[in-house]
Image (cartoon, rainbow, N blue to C red):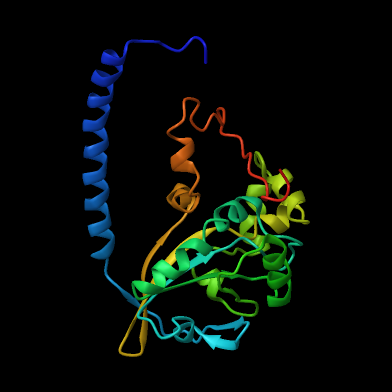
Length: 240
């Protein structure tokens, strides 16, 4: 960092004002994108999905828990995993604090994974989390929302460059094939007159919003400093 440009307070203030103008443009653009998200057409869901929860077997409509909106984080924890994905886990560290605030805005939040409920609960206790977490084991829910894949679907990717996948797979107690059957995602739903509708989904870098520490890191001198290509540096919070 010693080679970075050093200037006067006046030079900093001038450059900061220029950056502030860009930041305000970005804020307004984000507001416009948020409006477009809300205007997406809804898709009625007629499938009878069932989930195992700490309160017993529940339908998708029952996951709303009496509210009209539901946010689901598709947490990578497949049937072959011994532990949850470290990247998903890093994001999940920020969930508990937001649940009450979402509930106050007529929104229920839950994670959903294909691992058996008992395994999810053991991992949840290890991590010290309290947010709701449901198992979709035996359901097509994850497959229908394209966050779980069959061995046949992932087979072509196993012959390519796997990058950090082997390390992440080992961290989850599985092999690359088992690890890649799952993918992360975020989906939103609405319950209107007893009918569930799918309203929004995102994946890949659209999920950076769950990594609540990234905005802080982005404002430090070194930024993310993850290299090119970006290194997956995440660990579970009890493994650093």
